[in-house]
Amino acid sequence: MESAQATGINAPGRAGEPLIRLEGIHKWFGNLHVIKGVDLTLQQRDVVVVIGPSGGGKSTLLRCVSLLEEPTLGRVWFEDRDITDIRADLNEVRTHIGMVFQAYNLFPHMTALRNVTLALERVLKLSSDEAHDRAMDQLARVGMGHKAAAFPGQLSGGQQQRVAIARALAMRPKVMLFDEVTSALDPELVGEVLEVMIRLAGEGMTMMVVTHEMGFAREVGTRMLFLDDGRVGEEGEPKDMFRNPKSDRLRQFLDKVL
Amino acid sequence: MAITESPTIRSDVAPDVRGPTAPLPAVILTLGIASLVIIAAGIVFSQVNYALSDRVLTRNCIEEEISPEDNGAIGVCNIVEALQDPATSGALYLGIGLGAAALVLGAGTYRRMDSKRRRDDAITGAVLGSQGILLAAFVLWFRSASPGLFAKHFLNFADLEGYWGSFVRAATKTLTLAFAGELGGIVIGLVLGVLALSSRRVVRAPARIYINFFRGTPLIWQLITGYFMLLFGFGIRLSTFVVAILIFALNTGAYAAEVFRAGIQSIERGQMEAARSMGMSYLQAMRYAIVPQAVRRVIPPLMNEFVILIKDTALVSVLGLTLADSDIFSLAREGQSATFNSTFFTVAAIAYLAVTLPLIGLVNAAERRLRSGLVGIAGAGG
Image (cartoon, each protein chain N blue to C red):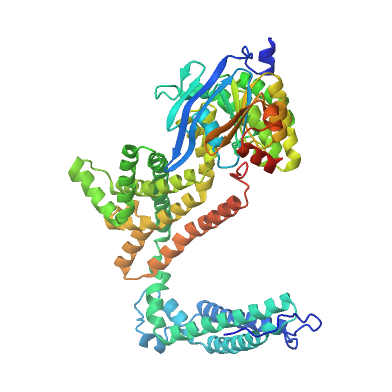
């Protein structure tokens, strides 16, 4: 078996190939203008980290990528498809875009294993044996193999989040979106989740990560976006941006969080 | 009013808010219990005593318009006589005395009890005492009015001979009506509930119209009109029993729809998002992620609807069911109009309670279970 199959990740494409492109994204919630014209390109193997003050539109932007939130204006391209086109098969597109949420959002009435196999069987139409094997592999990868039979309510926050990551990975997505996945965790549980994400980045997964973990942003991010008041305030190499922020807003923000 | 106390707290001298410790909490509790027990025991003892003894129709009873020709006259007379018996009177007045003592002592001293347990004892005693007084007063009032007339109409079971089997059959008919209606209603309700949640107005509107119509018109109107509408409007001739089930299902469907809608709306938004983010369609997400969770949450309110429907089936009596199809209430009405004895209604109430009380217990248990978080546990907070 080829190694990409074994690890459950799609064979990483050549670095530099555009995977996702956001063009002039605007989002209004009623009268509230949350995203005010954002352009962004995610290349293969990019780990794009999005930081910024709360209310700045980070999560909304991330959710626009998988169209959980529909941009009011602008286009989202996945590979060479315009997925904001009304005719796009979003269900199919979303199988390639893994998403992990702040609140884990595991299905509470299903075991950890069933959480992972559900979409494999119902969406990817795998046989239950295939789905089971793939799910067990993924659970083992995030160190949750021994808890496959547990219900979410019996797991700690960190364990639930790792199952949620396994659930998304089992679909073998081309890109993973992380929406403040450690924000709801007790401090001592943050590490186990970050560890999984760091390993994932190391394996070449394309990732977009909204986070408050500045250490993670600096060490793992290949690119960083400072989103402030719905606009990209600054963009560049994470280490660069941490060392010498160009704008006052970023400097102020970093002073507060570091 | 100006507050003039000094702001310093005098911690050296604890203010005695209780006053001297009150005595006798156990005595107060005993008085309260004794009051109720003596009243109840006195009444029951006399009734049993008269029911077992072989008595004749007294003059007193004849004055109460109980005639020797009446079926079950002796039994009715015994009830009246037992109520007037000195043993009953003694128990009533003694009960009132003990109850008053418990009430006065308890109310006067509970604040000064020196532990929570003793205070609870005093309060319980006082409350039981007041309940004893109320019960005794009620019985005294009742027996001073026309207990003979009442007993003759509501407590004369002699006319029910030959009907007991019918009541059992009628109870199964009532349950059949309610159960079939509820089942149909759940199916209709689930579909309507999902439709009512649609983001498209054209889908939502018909569901809303249906729900509002059936919630907004009386069930009795739906039963009567439904029968004739089917017959005259569509040429469908069904037995009244089947029509009744149909209307109950349609009506319950409207209420169940609201229950399902609320249940589905109560599931965290993230559940739908998680399902959709894995490529599931809206209907798949509903089917595998949302509805299974919602169903757990709607079990208690649906069971509640079922209890309501059991009682509402009594309305079929307006349709005139055949004798073989009679539900509990129809049967009671028949028996009552044949004998002019309303004891049939007394038995009907007992029959309804025999069915509904266990169900009410189940509903409460299900609600407790749901509240305790044993089912439908959400993975994490928002």
